[in-house]
Length: 275
Image (tube, rainbow, N blue to C red):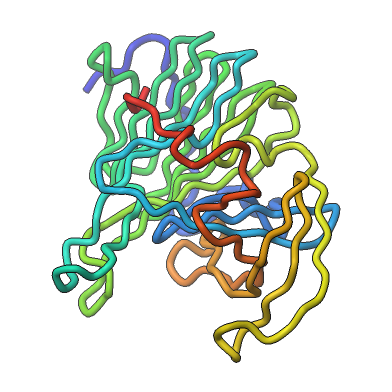
């Protein structure tokens, strides 16, 4: 497909096997969302991580990042895990992401099958088998074959989409995506969304650790945003550096769809469209 003039493909492509330079320079932990959607909120000033799930129906679209000053946004649509017994909680995963930078007319739609630039204007479609780096004005997209893609916005943020392919015997029965925030310090102070609201420092205290209802896990009391919550110490996985195996992250898990930690309630973040 011929690329429109706004896109430039440099002659030298990054190596398909090595991770991109952006990811090599990452902090050890980043904020993101992955698997059944587990939101991981890294709090560097506390050297700690908070986590929560959002339990919603397949098809629902959630606002992950929204910067009202620039209009930049990232929305994610949930897909279901096709397996499972009737009546059993169906895991949900992100199966479609829409990334928009309206100041430059940039749109990117990502699924586990295709990566489409400017879908509303019939832009080029790439597959995850492609290795490519392209620029449209101030946005650079780097596709690392069968692994991940990185979107870097000048004077904005840098974000990573991780491709998760299902393997035989996996508990998940369709491919899905993870989304990570590699750099957000240039995003505006009004940035919001399920992830975007945590681009700014958050203050909380954790006290009174004690055995929880599951005696193998520790519960504690968290004071955050004038709420007193019971939180549970747990393990999640961060796939930002190793899309295949991930790295274990210890976090304080906030129950009930992040109630008390997120601003408002999780249904406030449901949006009608991917863009």
